[in-house]
Length: 283
Image: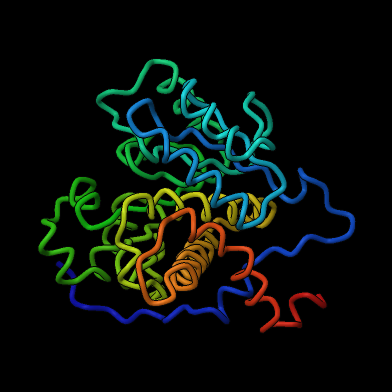
């Protein structure tokens, strides 16, 4: 195990710099199209939560491809989602999926998305397929999931999450967002960011699905920059963790929260960050 390493604290003022504000000449494609292959017959709600979070973070279009039940639920919640194949500028894959029980259609959709060459958020059951991805990759494990991706025990990861995240980023050649009360974002070049904005009430089912949707929206809205500089995956991952934590704090108000409550708070959180950084709106 590596010795403990320093990490830069990444907070709201830094996150505000990574929010893409639409210009007057933007359209749905220039703002970014995020695609989802998420959810399953067993866990259809993961698809809904991820799409809902992306919509409230801000993106030009959401394209959802999946089995019949999650597709119907996504459309009931977000009728503007497009459910046929087409242009995608970032993918979110694997939330709410068990690779041992996936149907063949979903396996095929995941494989096609992996080969698309655009930035990918690999969550849940898709993280073990990192080697198939041809574009820049962001992984979103918690400690137990990370222990299945690299040869480290959960106890060792929890004892030194910063070093574990950095090792995973190097071993897997991916940006790694190691989730926790304090989250660590490690990049393959060894850089490390630390985010502390999540209340303890956020430890609840569906939180990771929403985070993946937020991250997918951020990648899609920065697709042009990512095409020339994949290293911006690091600050984008940290921005997603900040937005996720601040929205949870607003939804909680000191008590329990639901994940749909969290997603409903995202537009207000984005607006507040931009108001606090008026130079971004003026640029």
